[in-house]
Amino acid sequence: MNTQNKETRNTKQKRLILDCIKSSNGRHMNVEEIYNSIKKHDEQISIPTIYRNLRILEEQGVVKKVYTSDDSPSFYELSDSDEHAHHHLICSECGAIIDFEEDLLDSLEKTIEEKTGFKIKDHRVVFYGLCKKCSEKENK
Amino acid sequence: MNTQNKETRNTKQKRLILDCIKSSNGRHMNVEEIYNSIKKHDEQISIPTIYRNLRILEEQGVVKKVYTSDDSPSFYELSDSDEHAHHHLICSECGAIIDFEEDLLDSLEKTIEEKTGFKIKDHRVVFYGLCKKCSEKENK
DNA sequence: TTATGTGCAAAGCGTTTGCACTTTA
DNA sequence: TAAAGTGCAAACGCTTTGCACATAA
Image 1 (cartoon, each protein chain N blue to C red):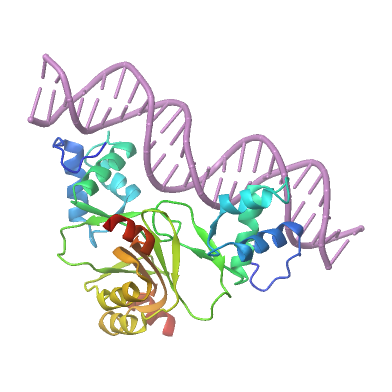
Image 2 (image 1 turned 60 degrees about the horizontal axis):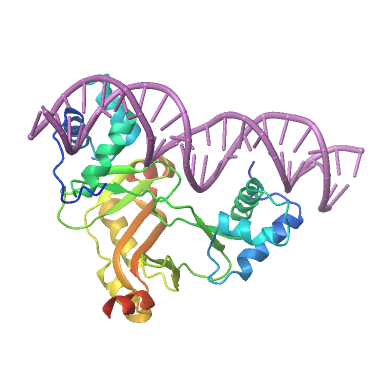
């Protein structure tokens, strides 16, 4: 079902899911985290409902799936939380996902397009490494 | 099992898998493609064997897993096929995976490290869009 | 000869679907 | 009150594992 231009109903579950992502710390949550968090307010919520609503919210542009590019589950974030694209820095030590609030890929993309004839519409970029905290710990 | 510094045996299956990737067109193959291709030479080969060998070859640095960052299966490529990092351009139309043989992310990574204190060790980058062919088709 | 690798079947895991029931509008 | 959304169970697709057998060194 394509819900891009479709009315969808304002269910308790959808509200809970959105509130959950909105109120989350870094606003990056995977399905399991959303599920466990909502269960405190709604014992009945089910995993499929979370997937279904996340898909709808994503199609509507409310939420964005963050591909961490490894084999672990996807994360979701609010997509209106910032106007411009940003990158995700994932700490291999503690698993933190940190936003870097600039894109800066425009010139690289231009270069690629000029050299290859490939028309870039989207990119998915993740940086792996150590967050400030874990990096400092390691240096001791 | 960590095979990074371990002798592993030179089995027929491993040879077939490596040959298969080496002889593939763009040298990007997923497990199913490898399986189907090898089946022509070895009726008995099994999927788990392919996964096991790919993991070993990856740990030994012979092969590299390409995370296409969406929900489709991973691809593998020779990791000694080039000295420096490169990016992957994936065509949303025909599924082609094209290499862009330059990295050019150094300055962006430096900026990120300076501004955030995050120590970047690796990145995974995929660009989505239309390859030259599909892009030209679309313009007609 | 023995540790390593294989094929098979079965399980694992995140995600999706079918269906009867419930809820929103 | 009818269309959309829910919860449950079961299926899905990709990947991994357990185990008895085969094979490389």
